[in-house]
Amino acid sequence: MYFFVILPLLSLSFWCTIKKSIPAELHGPALKPVFEGSLPENNNFLHSADAVHLSLVACGDRLDESIVLLKSAVLLTHQPLIFHLFVEDVLQKNFRDQLEFWPDEFKRKIYYRIFPISYPSDQNSNEWRKLFKPCASQRLFIASFLTDVDALLYVDTDILFLSPIGAIWQHFNNFTALQSTGLAPEHEDAVTGWYNRFARHPYYEPLGVNSGVMLMNLTRLRKSNWQSAILEYYKIYKMYIVFGDQDLINIYFHFHSDELYIFPCHWNYRPDHCMYMSVCKSAEQEGAAIIHGCRRVMHTDKQPAFKAVYLTFYKHRLGADLQYSLLDTLKRELDNVSSTKCGQVRYIFSKWIEKEILNSPTENGHW
Ligand SMILES: *[C@@H]1O[C@H](CO)[C@@H](O)[C@H](O)[C@H]1NC(C)=O
Ligand SMILES: *[C@@H]1O[C@H](CO)[C@@H](O)[C@H](O)[C@H]1NC(C)=O
Ligand SMILES: *[C@@H]1O[C@H](CO)[C@@H](O)[C@H](O)[C@H]1NC(C)=O
Image 1: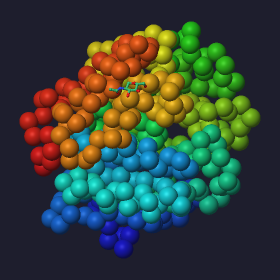
Image 2: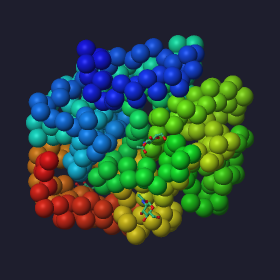
Image 3: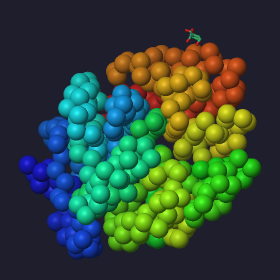
Image 4: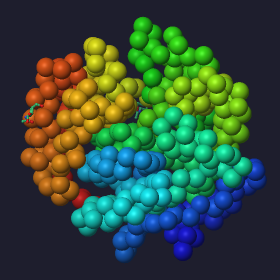
């Protein structure tokens, strides 16, 4: 069953190259999806060079926001989407049911696989599971589990797409031959920077990187010593790590800066970019392409602009008109928070999506 689905994703020679390049001790058990979507008949999109791969890890109370995230991805995409979802056991069935409940016109645009949370067999999985947010450290190991995937966008569950996902994927074309990973800076200025002022471990200089939106070329990660180095850094810096996997990623790229591509802050737009003053210049120009409601701001009243965007996507019914149901509601909700700091630059939250929706001749399923 598994191979039936996987093989169309890659040529046999590709599979062999990958297997050879992974040292035996790092090659985890062949990971089988617990559930997977059905491939629409005659749909060729798994072979399509056009397909965009998206991965996330959902544990604890993150199911709803993960579904809203995937909904934002499918609403605006122009390309086929392949979801690689690592989901805690008790949530797996519910997760699948919610995706299967999507209208056909959206299901046609996706293929999904739901995997169990998995760590290398020689590691203490309870320890990794608890590092920072539950299960977030999964990302450190996916290159060795998803051996049939060349590259993917890995995101935290508290992000939303305000642009077609193909737009961030374009950055892969700008990677140098050495770069395996793309990330945004953690801060825009040294005065408010956390790593430069407080970190007691090495980090990517000058201001660290945020791991919430991460382009990963898995082929290159498998060829590099990424996983063994991460395990080694964990042993050395364990006592100094505050933000779990993100700190490990910072430590890795401190020592391997030529493997990291930096994209600007509007690809990972956070409360820090507007809560005191507007500091993300690229977002002022382009609009936020992806927002990241870290510290749970999608669900609390601390940053109402982020919550307003979340609620708009949460309430939007798949299939409803994008302009009237999504865009107009979004702007109305944002107007209602105009007195807050982030609300003062609320155009940042609607600019890209407005451009996208108003310029799109056929807003639903044009392929
Ligand atoms: C990639 O680089 C080109 C040339 O510098 C630039 O025009 C383009 O905007 C870049 N792509 C992205 C996604 O930033
Ligand atoms: C990832 O790296 C491999 C090996 O360098 C390359 O062939 C492939 O095109 C890259 N994938 C993307 C999406 O850039
Ligand atoms: C505006 O915000 C207030 C207070 O949060 C809320 O009660 C009201 O329903 C909101 N109005 C709209 C149009 O969203």
